[in-house]
Amino acid sequence: MDSRDLLHNYNAGPSALPSEVKVKVVEAIEGIDGGPGILELSHRSASFDRVIDGAREVIRRLYRLPETHEVLFLQGGASLQFAMIALNLGTRGGFLTTGEWSRRALAEARKVAEDKADKPVELYSCEPLFTDVPTQLRPQDRDGQALDYIHLTSNNTIYGTQYKALPQRADGKESLPPFIVDASSDIFSREIDWSKVDLLYAGAQKNAGPSGVTIVIGRRELLRSPPRSARCPKILSYQTHAEKGSLYHTPNTLGIFAVAEVGRWVEARGGIEVMQRRSNERSQKLYQIIDKHEIYRGHASAEARSKMNVTFTVAEPRIESKLLQRASELNMWGLKGHRSVGGLRASLYNAVSDTSVELLCRLLENIAREG
Ligand SMILES: Cc1ncc(COP(=O)(O)O)c(C=O)c1O
Image (cartoon, rainbow, N blue to C red):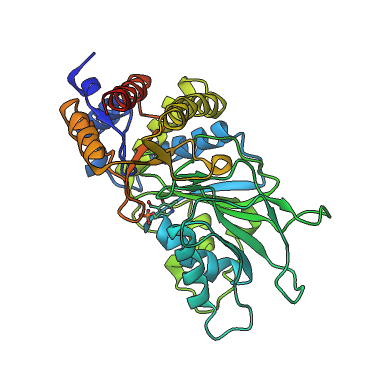
């Protein structure tokens, strides 16, 4: 055990990275293939080709990605995807507002659609509390017109809610339009049915690497078609990046290296299936403690609870302060809840160790007993 194992990191993002990955990153900064390190290496070199190919390949293997889909590494965070989706894939989408990020995705689509007939439609909203996610949907707008896609945020990082599965059609008929999924805070933690998902995107900085890289996994024909908006700048076109293998301009070389290493780390531990089982079990343990003690109250409704971000409040400010003080003494970081929810938030991403989860469970039990 080294000193880093004594630090317990529950940050919501950027967040914990596996120690093994950090060691590989430091080595890569020193040098790659006997040459310059990753920060000093051309993105047009054979060494970097191996890095980016390796990153794409490990994601393909982890998700058992069908040939219909391809992987891009972009910049601008998940937030830039809100605009890119509207510019490239059109604005006639159905949006599910389940938190701040999905609200921003809809706002960007509305902006792109300003002077067009194809307006985005808000199919669902649980504003302002954001304690739920929908399980059923209608596939059209109010006039019965079909939508091009449905946009959702699979895990709502701030509110601690998460879809258990993709929503179904409320009338039980045929299928819904294809889904576009913001998986920024649960990528690499659950299996995906690629027959239903046209595009998935994630800022890497929570469960897949450092900030500055956005992973986009999309249906090949969508990513390689010209953008729907004639005014889409070249750098915001998926086609630009797909045709150049994510090397149209200088990418975040260090970030892509780290994403590849995180992918290999997940793979070495049994892959996404194992991560899914592990996050089910770990979050379950924490929710049981929250439910058992009167002083804690989970924010999300029981059916919508996130396995990645556990959000809860503490009945008395005095006890909350005591809990946070004790956590700080134990070198536990990042437990304070987002300002819009208050209370506490424990992010249980893949790189958070079982020891950290156990320690948090013990702390909650002890504080509940002591009062
Ligand atoms: C679910 C979700 N979507 C989007 C974002 C925005 O990501 P970025 O900061 O990479 O733009 C976040 C950031 O926390 C997020 O949690």
